[in-house]
Length: 145
Image (tube, rainbow, N blue to C red; front, side):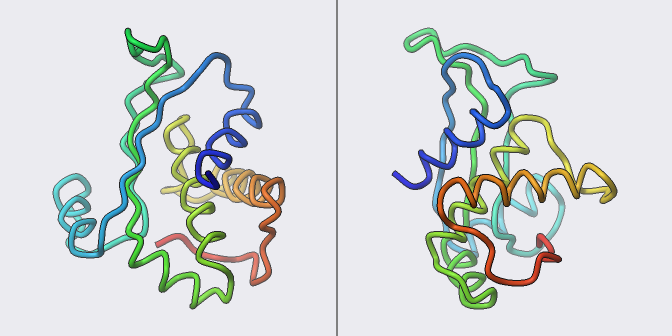
């Protein structure tokens, strides 16, 4: 339910219109490392991967539900657990944070080049965490791996 609430919070914050469909998969470090290598050519595990289906706000529609298909989120639960310990917050907060982060990617946000878009993305992630009652209790300058 927490991750569903997180997805809904991001969609509301972004004033997304209509219903949306998102698939969330939970894997271990070995599985996400294979995906990271296959799709990003980075031979290492990561915490979360996003596979957007839309482009510039245009999404395919699921003919059975009428929902816009945003894409897939793949989270390494193993990595999320380790990061929750490293950042000294709950596993639930880490999972919600990774989901919010990935939802923003599905909606077209990017942070790869840093700069203002990276800062705005971070602000939006923390806004969602606050809405969910999971505010940051560690350093604001967290880096995404």
